[in-house]
Length: 101
Image 1 (cartoon, rainbow, N blue to C red):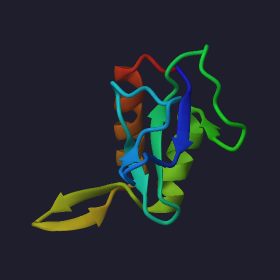
Image 2: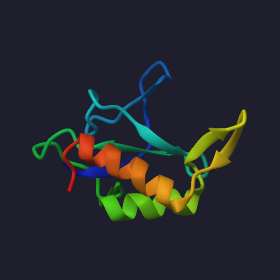
Image 3: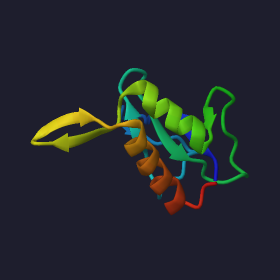
Image 4: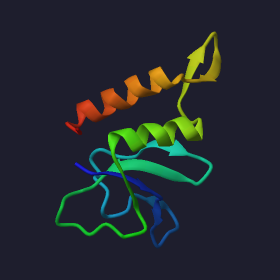
């Protein structure tokens, strides 16, 4: 499976929808508010992914999450940023659940 960084499309009514090249059954993860991008999986090899869409590996997904500061956890009722080790564990679990090398 291919990991993609993408932005939502808008339908005719102006509602946000997943792009057609993203696996709709799995959804969108790891939102980055700085650039309004999400992480998802490619639907299938037969569907074209635009050249402008960033393709990630497990390692580059971790780097994206370290740099963006988007991975948060609750500690004593407050949201705090995860450590790199915690991010690694979360991303590894997400990738392993989807059989991503």
